[in-house]
Amino acid sequence: MTRPLQNRRILLVIGGGIAAYKALDLIRRLRERGAQVRPLLTKGAQEFVTPLAAAALAGERAHTDLFDRAEEADIGHIKLARDADAIVVAPATASLMARMATGEASDLAATVLLATTLPILIAPAMNVRMWQHPATRRNLATLKGDGVHVVGPNDGAMAEAEFGPGRLAEPAEIADAVEAMLAGDDAGSGFGFLAGRPQNPARPLAGRRVLVTSGPTHEPIDPVRYLANRSSGRQGHAIAAAAAAAGAEVTLVSGPVQIPDPAGVRVIAVETARAMLAAVETALPADIAVFTAAVGDWRPASVGANKIKKDGGDPAPLVLVENPDILATIAARSSDRPTLVVGFAAETDDVLANARRKIARKGCDLLVANDVSASGGVMGGLTNTVHLVGRDGSVETWPTLDKDEVGRRLVARFAALLPA
Image (tube, one colour):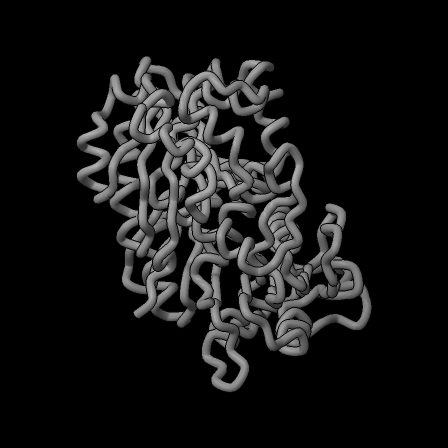
C-alpha cells in the first residue's frame, strides 16, 4: 500500500527551543508515512538534541554548519534549498521566525530558508508572551503573506510553568499539515512567487466536492412556535469556509442562523430536519460530507394550522415523532456514498463513551465530539474543544481553539484522509 508521503523528500529545520525534542518524534512519524527526512539543526537546537540522534532516526546526515568545508565546496546550502519537496521548520522559534521574515542569512538554517523556492511549513513554539508580542505577530503576518504555511501553536503548559498558546503542535498534526500542503502543491494551485516563496496557500481540496450541514433545525408546532436548539451554525460555517479556501466546490445546507454566509460557497437554506435531508440528498455526490448541523431529533406529530391559544384549561399534549437520521442515512448509502463521511456528536455528559457508541451506530468514518453542556459555552459560542473519534475507537483530543481554527484544522485532516 502506498503511504501518504511515499518518497517525498523533507528538509526538517530544527529550531533552538525546548520543544526541539519533539522533532525527533516528528522524524519518526514522517518516515512512517514514507518520507525521506534530512535534518538541519540550528546552533540552539543542538543544546537540546544532538545531530547524532537526529541523523540516526532520519537515516540521513544531519546538517549544522554554514561554513562546513566539505559541504560548501559545491555550495551545499543552495543544494539543501533545492534538493527536497518541502521544508518544515519545527520548532520555529521567535528568533527563527524573525530571521525568516526579515530575510536574514546569519546561519545555515536562515540561509537555506532565504535561498529556497520550495513550499515551507512552520510549526511555531515559544513562551506565550513571546507568541503574543506585537513583533512576533508582525513577523507571522509577513510570513503568511509570503505564502509560508503554519500549523499551531497549541494551547498548553509551558516549560516555564505558564499556560497558553505557544506549545508546539503535536508531531502527528505537523505530519498531517505536511501532507495537506504537498497535496495542494500537487493539485496545481497556481503558486506564484514572491521573494522566492509561494504567494498563495495550498489548495489541497482543489477539484473536490464538499457537502456541509450547519446550524439548528426548527420543527414547527403551529405557525408561530417551533422546537429548536441553541446552535449558532458558527462551526459548520467555519468548516465550509475553510473547505472553500482549500479549493473545494462547497455546498452548505444551513438551518436558520443569524450569521453571514461564507464567501465562495453555495448555500441551501432549510428549516426542518426533513428539508435538510432532502437538500443533502439533492447535493450528492460529494467527496466529503460533514454533518455539523444540530438536527432536531424529534418533531411534533401534527402542526396546528392556527396559533394554539390558551383557553384556561390544560394544554393539549405535545406528541413527538422521531426525525430522520441524516448522518446514518447518508453513511448507509451504497451508490453515491461520499468517500469520507464525518459526523458531529454534541454531548453534555460521558462525551467520549457516547461518541464511541455513536460512530458505531451511525456508520460514519470519523466523528468529531464536543461537550455542549451550558458551563462550556460551546453551543452558540466562539470557541470549541473537540475530540476526533475513529471507527476503531481511537481518540485525538485538540486544545480549545476558536471555531475558525477548528474548521481549518479539520479541513486539513479531511484532505489528508482522502485517497489520492
